[in-house]
Picture 1 (cartoon, helix red, strand yellow):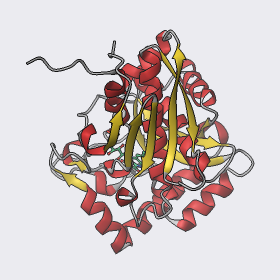
Picture 2 (cartoon, protein in one colour):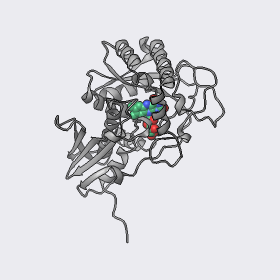
Picture 3 (cartoon, helix red, strand yellow):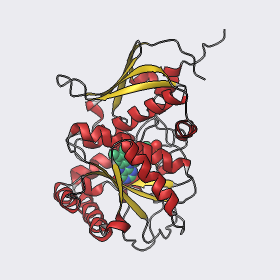
Picture 4 (tube, protein in one colour):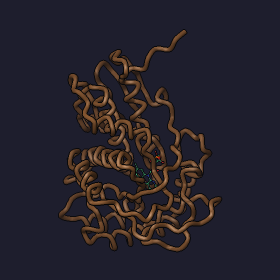
Length: 328
Ligand SMILES: Cc1cc2nc3c(=O)[nH]c(=O)nc-3n(C[C@H](O)[C@H](O)[C@H](O)COP(=O)(O)O)c2cc1C
């Protein structure tokens, strides 16, 4: 018996779950009804120590919503996204409603395709600068989603932010609850459907760079390597703060990451200073006047690494009565 062809919604949901999430927790659930896809925050998958207010989880859900939207667009379907549409349901993060046909642009098709190649690259980057044209492309990507990326080397914020990354990394290394939570989600087997597998970790650094990646995301089995001294760092910002801005920032972040992937760049995150209250306050002060910082990206050229697995869509889909539009 032949299997039915996947519908556009099947494809969109397969794209949604490829979104990045803290420690690959995948803190989302989806519901499909008619021409609507809902994105829900899954409280049971929020990191209670690193992310007690579900800020990073909302970024991840925003990224998943962006993947849904870009996949629909690439299939010639427009979708209107409403963020946190119902004050009575704060965990209903976003609702996408189909909004007619719209011919896909070349950029939309490129970004939709990049969803399945984007991954977090924790290995050393090559000693090759990101050219101004590519920096501008990432800036435009952020603006298009209503946010911005601030390149720290251009703004004089590099040294103070890099120092906060190192400070937060040191604080977290001393914090038993933090370490236990991280240990639970990392160093997993390669086929683990969630969490960060060992194969996605980088080699231990040889010497100290200006920023430190998470020690917990190192693979001790690999020989130590020298990392780039001063990677390009970009802070993702929105004008506002709070849960709505966090979902929006997730969409901004994801368009930046997919644009970077399409441009042949490697990306990873430096979230440590967002996760300890003291360094987070300092971060807010450093960016005061410019916007609300949500995440910090390390961007450069590198060799691609392996993709990490995801839970199957069936596990995160609550119910479905979707339209029967076959994927192109
Ligand atoms: C909000 C957010 C914060 C993250 N922070 C870090 C981080 O500090 N260090 C890191 O190595 N990865 C970080 N990640 C990347 C996740 O670990 C990664 O997305 C997840 O393991 C899935 O892997 P993939 O991105 O390769 O698909 C973060 C992801 C998100 C969405």
